[in-house]
Amino acid sequence: MQNLKEKNKWPLAMLMSAPLLITLVLQVGISDAKGTIDYVAAAAGLAALAGGVLVMLSDVIPQGFKHKLVFLRLWNELPGHRCDKLCFAESRLATDELKASWHHVFGSEIPRKERNGLWYRHIYQPVMDEPQVQSAHQKFLLYRDATAGSLVILLLLVAWAWSGLSLPYLGGLHPWAIGIQAFFIICTLLGAQSYGNRMVVNATVIRIAS
Image (cartoon, rainbow, N blue to C red):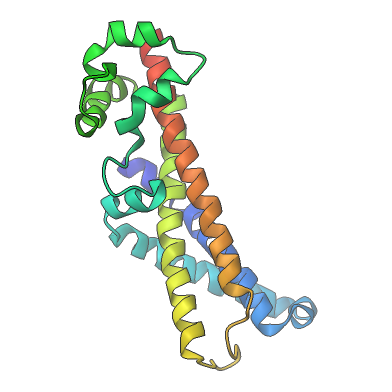
């Protein structure tokens, strides 16, 4: 997992920098930004630097909190806890075959809190290095961490707006800034959910094929 997170460092910084760059342009005015190439380059550099700092902050946020945030659940939040529902709904997988092959994972009597650990050991681990599984896992981590980092930005923007603070060169917060950041959070959250679920299904498809 650490290798996948390292691969995500730059994409994550750029992903979290995008709404910051938009906000910076709005803060100073679009016409001014268009007229000064040096300013645009400086703003992009500042946004990238801020994104890099937020990557480090994102690493500090506990994984458990990130998972609860992304899947909007307090308990049994990981998609592996729902591997039965996800895989039974997948057209490439047969419910009867899954239950027959791994009844201890997909059986209806298995407690939901235990299902993720069972899926992880018996389904995911044997195929974790397969390209389809790694790709979905890496993108899940990217969007999960981007969601957590973007939430930090959103909270800072809300604090700025609430305080009414006027910063040098930037003034007060642009009224669109919070909406832009919230939109990015929704996009990254949905991306994390999609790739997290896809990782579970892809691993199961490859596992049963092998």
